[in-house]
Image (cartoon, rainbow, N blue to C red):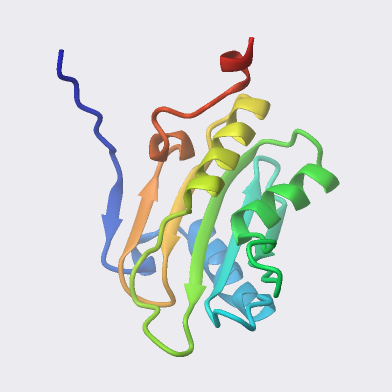
Length: 160
């Protein structure tokens, strides 16, 4: 039997089409790219997360000469939230990047490890995480729940 999976999302020409709270979160994420530690790739990634209570936190990619010891911005953010606000539901995460040696004009999506980590956090808090994907300029993609990016995710129920 053949089946199909679809990914519903919204696409906007730029961030001006977002509501004020989301535009503010995009600005926080773009500003945070300056804090990226990316001396090897030069690819500065940041994630800004708004918790359900309105608290905003950021995370950036942290590279290491002992590749692949680095950590992505999304997992840095999830670790920060988990350490400072254990089990706090995250409402929205903006993921953005700045590539000083190239273009930063289109959305990028989380890597596979980050997708699994986002799904795990959704499962842990029993709350969907809305994702806003953007560059420094250009189109913006909004996905209502992170788990939509990893339809066949691995979970604790698989180990039971």
